[in-house]
Amino acid sequence: MSFAEPYSDELAEMLLNLEASLNQQAFNGIPLGSTLAASLILDFWNGNARWSRGARWRQRLQRVQRFYKPYGLPDNHRSTALHDLPRDGVLVTWLRDDPRYNGMIQPLLNRLPDDGTIVLVRSRGLMQQTGNKAATLLEAPPPPDKLAWQRTYRRMAPYWAKTLESYVRDHGLDALSVPMLRVRLLIQSQRVSGYRHMLEVLRPKAILTEFDRNIYSSCLVLAAKSLGIPTATLVHGTINPPYGYNPVLADRIFAWGTLQREQLINLKTPPEKIRLTGFARVARPEPKDASAIKQAAGLPADKPVVLLATNPIEPKAHERLITTYCTAFAGRKDITVVVRTHPAEGDNAWEAYRDRFPFVYPFGRGDQSVEDSLAMTDVFVCNNTGMSMDALLHDVPVVLLDVPGSSLLSNRDLADAGVAQITKSDSELASTVDEILKSSGLAGNLAEKREAYLKSMYFAMGDEAATLAAKELMALAGADVPATQQGSVHA
Image: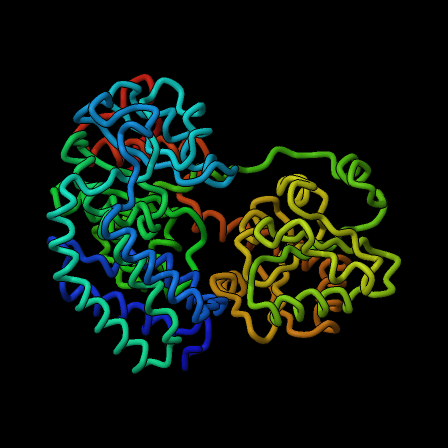
């Protein structure tokens, strides 16, 4: 376990310094430490990392196996071989097939020319959604010259091992993490070699990814930079400082608005990298019939709904969050108490609480869309989930429940802006919710603040944001969006 607490500034600095230490010796000119960000977030940043001595031996065996049989997707396993794809166009990644990613990428693809655009998709199912644009799987091919890769790896492996072992020892991180990180560096070195070969074949004029610190995109972006190919990244979710999005690897980052620009600059992103394009996935929601949604969900139509949205946080903090929320409204007959669990928490996330809090209406994965949940909600409660921004777009008051063991992260900015209120106990939560429900003056004041905040958060939304991002990408490639697809120009 680290000396630093999960989600802390101290741990963020520690992880950034680990990346920098590994980058001091580059792999064929490419700083591979920067490709570990996603691993470090999952394994250290959220405090959920678990390793075993048995896994250490499996990871050593994996290093041997991958040394002789490199990681990668050869052409004969692709639906479209690299040499059959168009040259000299733009390349766009599509990392996941879910509404939140699809809502970012699909509108943007609709504004890019069919001729020359290549989409790298994470799954074969996404190929059916790329229209007339060329598509192939995202995974990199194996290193084109295995012997050359092996020689470079033999030279780099001792440095990586020594750096990891000393850093983990000096900073109180779990020593059992070292074999896992060594395997990931080996695989990332193969990915970056394969992507460099892919890009030498395709010769794209620009590359856009949803998140340049992902295990795939980071390798793709760094390989492109080594070849002088311009790169850009979208911002796929709310930025939770101070680790995960920085440093930005791509040449450009398409920020949602002025607030996010300030966040990125505070994270030491050079201002010249930042372009304001808005966020294509969000739009003002169409009005829905809340009574009909409640009826379809089996909820009373005549009572206000208070909804808690959970998300994966430290297990003890997760239990405190749910227990505090449910205790706040136990015995209340005048409101409907709802808990919406996060898809990543699994299908049985509510089972441990069902008998303790039988008055709660639970909604799990696939039970109800985000839009329907918010359309029927009168007060939205959460800890640090990004669904808080969706609540603001639906003009739903937001109350933050701050529990020990889990930081509010970027949701604290909502409180600083006056568009959310922080509570720390069941009694405080209950009284805050009651005040919002009963005071029309407070509700009106919060609505005005939400509107002002959204204007600074989103430079543009929906189709306009997609058009701006497409224009920025094509400008980076030295081309224009076709006249029939142009929208308003971002000055």
